[in-house]
Image 1 (cartoon, rainbow, N blue to C red):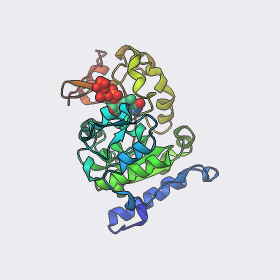
Image 2: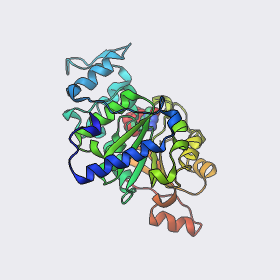
Image 3: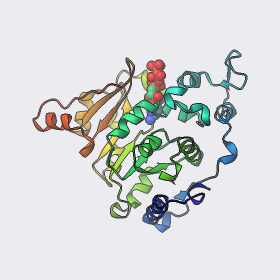
Image 4: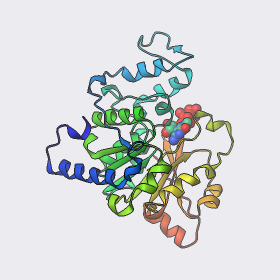
Length: 293
Ligand code: MGP
């Protein structure tokens, strides 16, 4: 069961006591709603189980034309299934996703790029951590990760997926609503040095608007600021730079591309801002930065 299994090394033992302190930092009155959602998923590591999950939730299903008899899924998920190795290069080793996970997980190279900004941060929180794509990269980058996620199912998936990448022991998940939990995490007890978030964008329909309203993410960013000013936010590619500056003030905007395709953008605040962008910001030049993957 989760952290209770196979904990042997000193490092892992230290992690367990750290995670205990995280849970202790969440006030007792929320014990019923904020529960540790570590679940043994070892009997569910069939590489096709994620596909079956999608199928189970499907009302309008689409046969994939015989490419794989196991695969029946919604038309809107097929696009992401075709990108599965961009999402997780170890997809075939047992990665699990639900419908929301399919369309919202950060592609692996982008998640890895973002994680490099967190280098040296011992403890990182991932708000709306979903099926764990970003958590995995933070852990591979050397951080301990606290995920906050309101779906127990997706926490199970994240643990399973972290197992695939061999970093499950570096993670703890708190099951519940970010806006209820974060104020209860005492800054000192948790020692969270930076926060990442990929908040809900309203699903794939986000592209139906020419310009996405970035102010929608302000409550989440304000919530993260209870803990730290070192924050990164994954936002849609149709968010406009001028709106970002108007809503959030000075920050760095990184364009995340896969090949030539702009996929997402990441806003960086606090000491996650790169040296080059910081110089531009402090000399009152345009703080716009791009980085290409
Ligand atoms: P996309 O724009 O839906 O796909 O998502 P794609 O393949 O670029 O679309 P195309 O039609 O232009 O070919 C691109 C990436 O944005 C996804 O891989 C996710 O990382 C992220 N993303 C997409 N959606 C719909 C969401 C969302 O609702 N929430 C979050 N947090 N991320 C999302």
